[in-house]
Image 1 (spheres, one colour):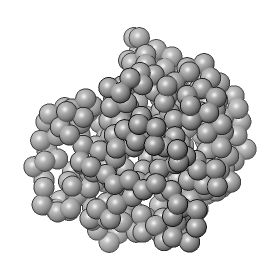
Image 2 (cartoon, rainbow, N blue to C red; image 1 turned 90 degrees about the vertical axis):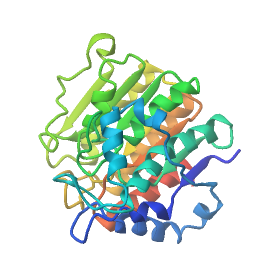
Image 3 (cartoon, rainbow, N blue to C red; image 1 turned 135 degrees about the horizontal axis):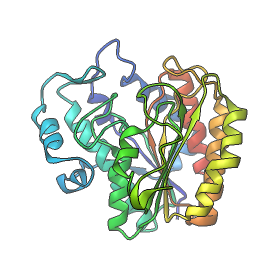
Length: 311
């Protein structure tokens, strides 16, 4: 069995956000160009996305949102003030949403142990009823529900994007079987993510926000991992781990105000992989979320992949 699968597709480049938008196809091109210089990556099993089915999407989103996305096929405009679309955006969004299920199937079949989905548009801001913050469908949430159909009932979602994953939190806020943990700059966009928000009903205690003050860096994240992230993983004992891997907490990122280094992302990746081997057979799927400095994004994504694949 190969250790790590990699999913990439030029179809994601067809989501054209315009010349001045930060979430641009240049992000994926910068990652692809760096990956081409790393010999180990060419030996990793490659996977192609498939469109998410309506059934998969409707486990997270309502029918009005699905119909809204379908209705903009082949058109250009804005879903909200932050989320533009182009003629290729709907196809890219369906493929991004279907990428996790492709990798979940591969892991379930025993082909690979973990995987990294280099997708766009990103997903963690997308809510049940609407697109938001560059996101059209919630890719990681759709995958969590898909994994449950395969028998992986307890899912741990770790979101280290600089922005709080509001859409993912909302999707599972009362669910006792899905633990959502987010480290994010706070206060910051989208305004949610208070440490007081711990879940509700049967899901109380299964939602953990770790607000990071502006200027926080590697030492603060290391402390948060040791005191909160790793103990939460241990106590929850998931069957599977999903990562919303945004790299915009990097100190070079133009949108965020945190000071993580590439080494900081390497540390977090290593600690999660180590814990995953102990508690869930190493089963991890990572999804690209944010990251807007092209150099820092590519470097951090490559370090994350190198840790996943033991290279």
